[in-house]
Image (tube, rainbow, N blue to C red; front, side, top):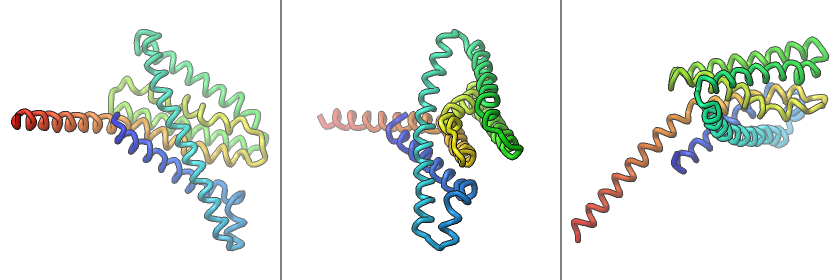
Length: 225
């Protein structure tokens, strides 16, 4: 990918993370972060709280992008270590199952003290799995069928690793943060997974155009000489 296209890729992912966190934060964190300022008409504090959510989304986006490029390296290493993509896919499925088990038994279950919390974690797990499955199917349809497992692995396992720090926090209002931060992680990761081929293709076109311009300049210089 060229620097120019990487910057577009980075900026779009950054904006997605910021906007998703800001908009969803208005609803999910309304009682904790916005309602007091709204009812008191303290608009500067209200917009400052919204800006904080957006900046938080930018941070999540950067973390998600680091996770994405780390996964690309891990994926290539996995294929090289296990020799075949088929075997690596089975390993990825095993890791997916382990991560889901870990989420249920060691992240959600200890925190689910009320019926409302149990339903919250069930819904969040469903959002994670269903969104990941849909994105993986779209990815496979856009590229190749064998990309399905790798896409599912990235969306579930890597997203969970990026989500893990807030899952490990013990605080009174942690459920709202756990809920909120899942959405920008999934949105940014889905964007990265689905948009990367377009930017790679555009980079190849840009390189061909650059090479063509260089060729024409060389030919023009040779003609003058």
